[in-house]
Length: 287
Image 1 (cartoon, rainbow, N blue to C red):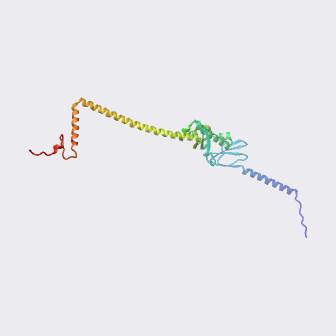
Image 2: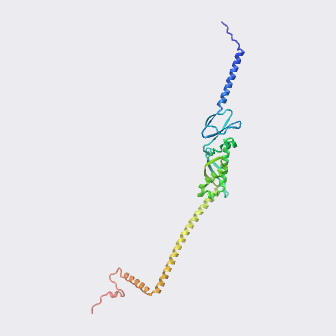
Image 3: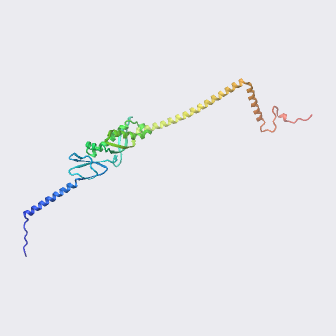
């Protein structure tokens, strides 16, 4: 049986393997670095590119960007909802002008301002920090608006103006850093004892309103009766003066009344004798 011998690897072959392995490792590292050096920018975003904190590009172009050793920070420029939790509302406590502490469910639509978004980046550096500022402005603006309203005014016909007041106050806090598009104050809850007192006051107001309306009706009716009585008395007074000034007119009215009485006296009878008696109707025998 023939023997089989193997030769030990030479130094050159070992060196070649090591060099090849290092080259492969370097290539892999380069591939990883290159693959992580691209950033995709959407048309609805404003992305700022920085390298070690220094701004490289104030606004990255839309599409795929090569960003070696750099970091993009992107802000969504479309309208956004606040809050963006599952419930879709933010419950905020505020004090009214009464003062009474109330709770309200508030929702807001807002967006960044394209003209100031770069300054927002310089001030905040992260979208999370910028959104926190918006959240704080919503809360403070809501409280400032409610502080000028009483409970009765909140639950009056002016309630439709409350959302506009809240929006203006939030915008004042934000300035031009972001735009508040819509504010929805969907519910305001007051303490139970205040709510009960408000309901009782409304009921009493309805009772008073009905009483005042009935009083007005009664007063008008009484006034009408008084005016009629005054008119009748005045008419009789004028009539008496007329008869006193013209006796012939009184005689004429008397004759008129007698004529009407005579015309009614014989109604419904076959034989009528005016000025006599029933005896006059008997036939007397001839002499």
